[in-house]
Length: 393
Ligand SMILES: *Cc1c(COP(=O)(O)O)cnc(C)c1O
Image (cartoon, rainbow, N blue to C red; front, side, top):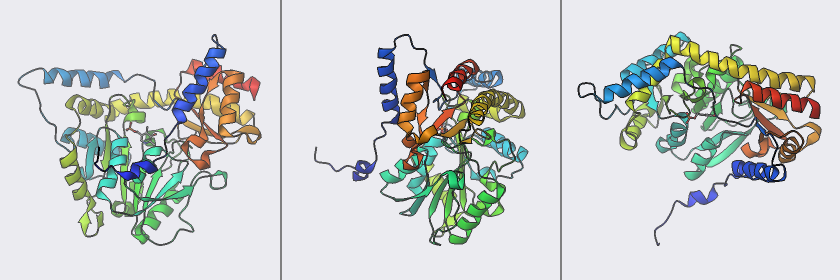
């Protein structure tokens, strides 16, 4: 063909991480057909949905099957009943959010990837290591990327100290995937103050806020100034087990302006053009999940994951292995013992213990020498893996 393509796609690094992991596991299985492999690399929830969520979805589905209660296209920005539920969830956490600033989505990843549509050619700042969508969506749009290194010295939490005063777009994720690091009040305040003073925008991914236990900020709107300089993108995926159901939301305060335009209005225009909303049964399920009763059930599941986290953290403490995360997060980011590289440590755990994790270097250059374990496996599997690692490490 003779048409032109988006040449920026040539600059995206192919991620071979998960295919590389699968290849190594398969080779090991061929050599050891009876090996009992335990996976602690899972980045997806595994516990099933609470009953009241399933019932809400069932009820809504039945409504769709009856002439009187059938519904067609949903509103592009979400049904009011779900926006009310999101507003009320924030209110219970101590935040006042305007209905008009809430946009219901089919998950955080879509909005995190699509938000570049309404932004111009800004300097982009992202954490390294990083959840890949912030990086790749900006490379696809030809943006220039700057990295905020996350390392042992800064406890995997970059600060704005030393950055110039030019306006920029800054992606922050707390509690973080993959490092589990969580900004405390002062650390996050420093970023909001910096963004406010330099005319920068923070895109804040709070997909794991429901895992926060130690009083760290659950929302960027903890800080008054954030409503002039921050967008919050979140999801029911990890909080409520919605990875397969698909529902999230984005908050764009009506106060935010750039080039004399309201970002909220630009996003409305973008969504009305390219998005036709989230299905009615899913929005009813999300409403139930965010209710007080629903959140009780979600937190029960999160507590079950935390039991696994504790098994892993106790082992690492005992073995004096340095790690970040595990306190407000389902992720444990450990330093490979004896200065091993990420993939060498991966092979070592696989061969010697039949345990699979995720090599840190797969999340960026700053992840080399690190390794991600997760608490999403069953308690039995986590215990089995921990017992084997106890003997090995
Ligand atoms: C899992 C995850 C999300 C959620 O994505 P969905 O599209 O809502 O499933 C967002 N951000 C991070 C960092 C994640 O790990």
